[in-house]
Length: 186
Length: 176
Image (cartoon, rainbow over all chains, first blue to last red; front, side):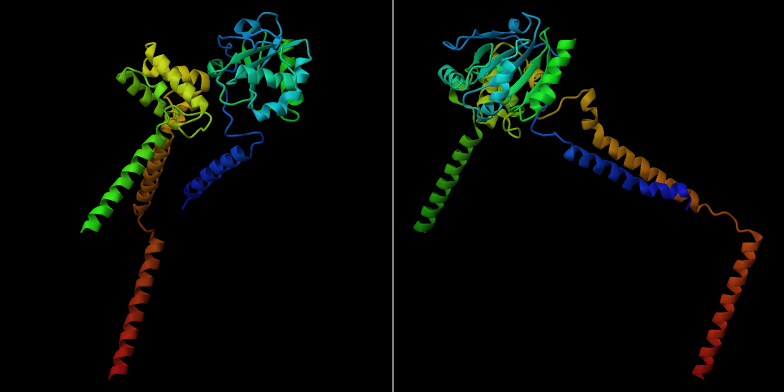
């Protein structure tokens, strides 16, 4: 038997090793969560929406045009009073809200207006604008399937990044702020 | 006999109850969502069975009780009432949530491997088997022996013949 023919017998083993190697890589890749869906909206224009304000909150409602009105990068955060992880990332939202070189907008997702208002009054309102989305219609247009979700939108109204779930320790400094800075530099 | 009829009746009643209960379990569609037009409603149900609930992820929105699933069911019905085709509705959802929202992935360049991968593996197997057997057949074609090999073969056959004869003679000797 020639060496060439012997090599054929090694082929199935080789293919198996390659496939299992891929499985191993995909399963152990850091930061890979199969429950997190890649957004199809990245690098697409933000959807059309016009959301009413939370009465008595003291900030106006939130519409599509607010993303492109002042030439700043926007962070759009989807939150709800019933959402426990939203409380986890709230300090990060407060930090973002203190910056005046970005817009921080909130969408109050599937919430009663009085509950949303009470939650913001209790924990502090970091948002420059808050829109009510009681039936999650704007949320569906944004491809939201859970809360919290955080989007980064550039000054032209194009969605550039999406974070699903709460911002955990380090997410703000390691991911969100560098993306904001790179968009500001453009 | 009466006992038998009674127990059978109870059994059937039980089965019917379980049946009705399970029907109401799989049906998450609430009365206020149902469309008046039965044709549109039937289409909505068919689409809903193929749309993934993104909160539960392995359940179609048709049978999910999640808030988002309910809202998506209503959106599907609104699109149908507005005159969308079934494909339009699916495009509407996948443009927001990606192909993952559809249980059946669509045909396109990025899903080519998904659809034709098994066929590809099968084809590789067939080609492999073809070459394997072709290789065997070419090996079977006998090359004539060289003069040297011919001599060796003669020698071996001769040895064998002599050995057999010797054994036969010995056996005969023992027998007599």
